[in-house]
Structures are given as C-alpha cells and as structure tokens.
Image (tube, rainbow, N blue to C red; front, side):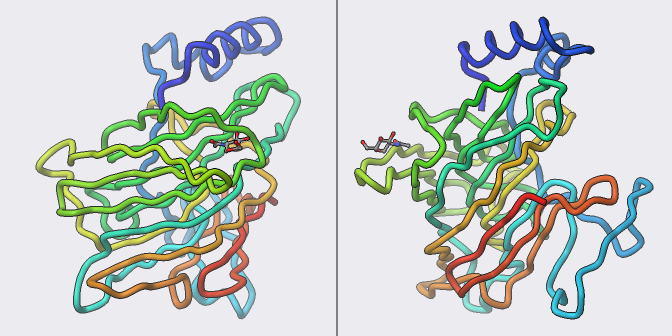
Length: 275
Ligand SMILES: *[C@@H]1O[C@H](CO)[C@@H](O)[C@H](O)[C@H]1NC(C)=O
C-alpha cells in the first residue's frame, strides 16, 4: 500500500510528538520511502540464524516451518497435473493492539496469494493491513504483484469487517485481485500484469498468510493482531480444488520468540494467533 495522506499525517504528527526517537514513518519519510511491501517468506534453517534461538514444536509439529515474516499455511507443491491459478479465503479484519508503549507504528497483514514461498520470483496477492500508531488504528485493503510494492484498493475498512480475498491468474503474467465485502457481496477488483519478465508466476505455491511486512528494507514492527481465522480456504489447480490439509504450516519467530502460532481446524479452516 501507499500510506494514505490522512494516515501519513497522523503518523508523522503523533510520532513526532511522542516517540522518544524518530518513528518508523519518519525514518522512512527521511529516506523518501513510504511503501508497504510483502516479500517472500524469510525462513530459518534448522540451525536458526542471526543469533536467533529456534524454538521447535512438539511431536505434532512435523509440518511446521519457521519464518520471520510469514505465518499461515502454504501448499508448496502443485498437483502433478497443473499449477495453482486461484487462491481464496474469508477472514475478519483484526483489531490491532500495540505490543509496547513506544507509540511507534506497528502493523500486521492478512492476505492470500500465489507463489513467494519455495517459488520466489513473484507473488500475486491481495489482503488487508491493520495499523496502530500512538493508539490510532487504521486499515487498508491492497493488491500486490511482488517485486512491485502494494497499491491500495479504494475501500474503507474497519476491524470486524468480514472479507473474501481472492487472487486468480489467467497466465503466468496476468492476474486479478478481488476483495469482496462478505456482508454486502460488493467487491473491488484489480487486473494486474507481471511487473517484469523475471517476475512471472510459477503457480508453485498457494498460501493464506498473516505477515509482518516490509516498508523499504525495514520490517514494520509487528502489531498484536489477536487472531485471524481463515475460513473457506481454497486453492484451484487444473480444475481441482485443494484445502490446507497436508500443506506446510509457517509460524513467525523473531528474536527467539514465537509471535504467531497456527492451529488447523479443518481442510478449509485455520487460525493464526498472536502470542
Ligand atoms: C461491508 O458492508 C457493511 C454493511 O454495509 C459495512 O458496514 C462495512 O463497512 C463494509 N466493509 C467493507 C470492507 O466494505
């Protein structure tokens, strides 16, 4: 997303008054960068990395992988007959809470997408962000074809809104992002093209994710998003429909702490909970 004018003004004004050091938005503004961007899953290898103590799940955590930025479920392989061409799910816009008293902008995203896990050239995705900055909450709905940054839909959101997020690809270089208001059935749609010949879709991954996203090269501090339950989680490939069973589970760890835990309820439903 691009921060909206109101959001930017609010962030800069409140950040300047209360933050003991320049807030994130100010630091980014100073660099001329005010963008929101998902990036591919940044996973830890088995030894951990960057002085991180890697926590392990118990015996039932065989499918769990750990990442700095993605929590949720990824189908990491398409069926032998084809590639993923559609991913969708319903979820409720979360109510963000600050994890400290700094007043600094914190955020979390929830989205659906194609690619970006084992296939890192591109991600076609759509979803929402929830921000908290000095107690002020704001929300955006956006679409993104990585490595381009996200762009906002013209849609006002609030915590508790139930949306259906869908991405579809008609070819490796053409796709559509759709956010539907579940209660009214009204939707916003954006047709997208691969931003570069090196950024076409492989259709190798289908995912439903809560993300600690990037702005410029910085990770935005992760807000306490409470929980996000994805329902009706579905991926399509070569005429077949697939849920989340037998897919990879990703949980977020930062600085040796588990921040986002995943519990699967059924083939089409799971919950990501902030810890
Ligand atoms: C969805 O529609 C309801 C009812 O009109 C409205 O209150 C809500 O703000 C809408 N949410 C979004 C995301 O459009």
